[in-house]
Length: 596
Image 1 (spheres, rainbow, N blue to C red):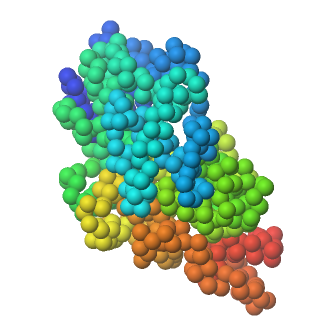
Image 2: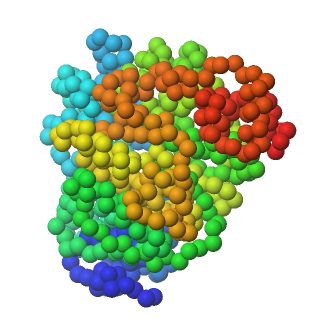
């Protein structure tokens, strides 16, 4: 193989090193050759980011005859060392907020759902501690990871209680009184200061390691190699840290991408240059040597579940001839919040069908307004996004999701899909021939406005940095062609055969976006105003004609636009109605059966 000078320098290196590898630079291939160049009697450990990466890497090492390389995840090692010995039972999905309330017999004060707000923060505090390098909960200040001013004030008023209950729940896990979480046994493994019997340890995806994982790694005596991309750190919200920046190893670089060409490389550099506004950017040169491929796989990538679902709904309702689609990861995960509530639970709350609500937390809420108040006090973005979907599509959700699931293929038939749908987090490490980016990412304009409108002390710089990383990761998934909204295009970049600019017809203020604190807001709204975050009457204000009766004249206009193959989004904007209302009217008039 013709190795680049950068690759050869890594392969022939000695001692501890860190490798900063840009997207598509062949880091796994380089690391495999690094391992192959070590003495055959060397015992080598390759630490993978997750199980799927582990299985893929295992096959690659075995194909090269490298049976002296052990492939693991930090969790797989920790599980074997901790769980059987202590007789622990593991709770794979972790604890829901209402379960923590019940286990700890939490009490509130003023509002009936205060105990659930406290349970939510206790859950997050546990995750924060377990992912940290600290030995005790008391060594941490949970307020360091609470950024919204109103939420900080609430947490501060209950801080001693939250901290005490956090320690109590961890103690229950430690004694085996209740099931433990994956985070817990990894933390216990870290605190046991293990010494691993390897001459060399290769630590992949180092930019998204937890402090606990990094602490285990750095304590080892063997040669240590960290591989990652500083600009692909996108798991800060799960308390990940960029280990490439937290170590003093000699730095090597992989700056040539074999995935895409120079046009995409220029676009990627342009996106990263936005970091100059944050004062965190060091000039980066990316060389694109990828050769354009035949378009066999197409993917739509969004920042959020909401953005992705809206695009998927639009796709299946406008592209009637599409037979197969695929969602990266379990399709059902896009309709469930991390805490377990489903879109259907929120829809039943919206309709007042309390008896049909399965999730106990949602069932405790009086109405959607009360749920939104809970969201604003917990920074629970996933729940908030699901509220927005319910408000946009209402009772059409059942039929729309059924149609999407009918077209969805299983993993083994992914190649049949005419379009793959994924959020950035779920497609990390993936690549496609053609990528369509949804217009729900941070724009440079929004970034500059956020910086100008807030005091430096109030800015969450790491969150803003990660927002830029998300767009960079999405854009660099392509092997050939990228369709990118005009608002996301770096200034001065010229469209080409590989970069197709989409002029969005959706007004900027009508699409979801996140402020620097990670909460949802719409353009021009005060992020400190409760009604600005998940506004209860937003649909009625945005779609002024949403409740006007359909007339024969309006039906005729809708039919003409349908036959002209206008998108549901275009029709919704034209009629001043929600997309759910347009979809419902198309179904009622049987336009699909009649004209397609």
